[in-house]
Length: 136
View (cartoon, rainbow, N blue to C red):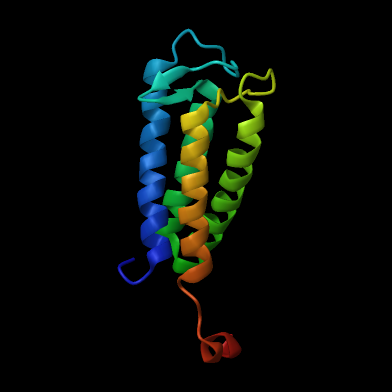
């Protein structure tokens, strides 16, 4: 893991998102599963569905980070792409009945920042050399 930026990033992000998912359940009692308005976890709005998504993403990132550089790179790329989409679409969902994961402005900023970091590392790090990929 020390030699793979993708594994390190996936492991750290995975642990953080798992922690956020668990902590989110402490502030969402009484909130509907897919309520459009959530309770704040620090400055980020969450509802139970949002917490479950954080747990799933955290588990995928952590598992990939602990597996291999290739797995971590693939999951970082996939999660980064999804977060980029969620960050952009989230800008249009605020105040909408379609906002089933209770996004707020801080969530959108965090999702876009996570996307930039995850995509940046996935696309720029852990590249195989041409001779190594030719041998495969």
